[in-house]
Image 1: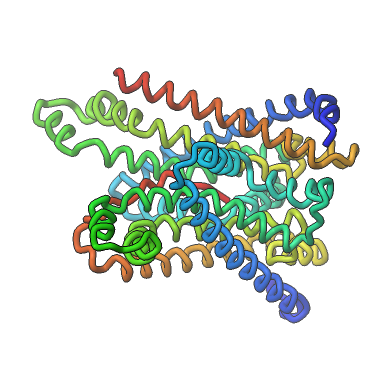
Image 2: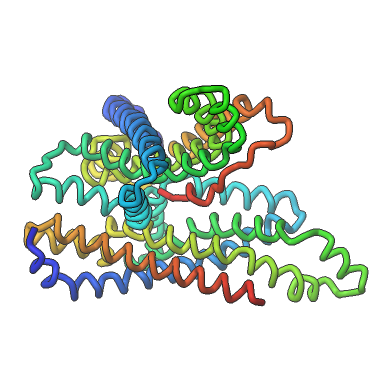
Length: 215
Length: 234
């Protein structure tokens, strides 16, 4: 073990960690949009939309992320869209995350007691108001812990995009350890950085949860 | 579009790769569950430092990407004299990774066993070993089966990551084929459909097993442990 190696590599690793965080956040953002769309499709009452949403969720939860990533990476140029690896990676993370997020939303919506929507209806609330003032705020509050958990999972999963050459934390660790022949130290450092980011996210999650509970 | 000569040429290597995938998965699950169970038991020992150590182990494994763990084991191992073949490192990595999640699943299951049952067994004069074997483990298995099945499905997907450290499993053989035939997209699409089917079939089988094992529970009288611990992802 030589710790000076870690200190030398630290600036590069931290810079790469920023990329990791960005890619994960963008993936999460895309995942939110897709998640909402899929969730709405499955709740819309149309059988075709429900089935399409179901197939989507089943596919993106059933196929390993690495294969999804390669699929998107090689498919986009085939249909004439030439994108940099970074964009393909965000797309892959977002598509996969969307499947999980839609299930989180579905579960949270189901967790809001039925009687509340019925009571609002009985009081003469219009449909959009029921959604915007009663169902969604509560569903969001319920979904927060699961969403933070999802972000942590996504952050860990983002290590896989090193395979298509995005210079995030894992890829940069590979590059550095290939040049200084100190894989043990470098990967340990990378692991600690991942752990630290996830720890911060978990703390942030508890803080948000507590804040929301106060109402 | 489908070239039969390709099947003849690459069929054997894909089949062999699938064998390696199954081997890694089965061995990884076995190691993970065994180690996870031992960790859960050790966590019950009233010894603070030991508990902290296990908790730290679980948190570190669950807080870092599987790929980084594999690199540490396979590439970093030789620095401390741990020279492993790719497949061995892959199996060990999968087992260690799984063990942290299984330990949490088992812990939740252990806590869900009603205290009264253990006390009743104690008052009947059963030894701790007998209580564990006859009271705790059976109850634990029933309440944790959904989480165990879920974790095993997750490990199926994680085997794909082993291709990155050159374990010659299905994904690796597929990538070799894709590189040699230039039919990259078709191969990956085929692989995606194959894994989709595999995971769907295994989780369906798992649900049937679950229904069989829990069939005597007409109403869920056993509190199910939180599944939040088991939502890892490949």
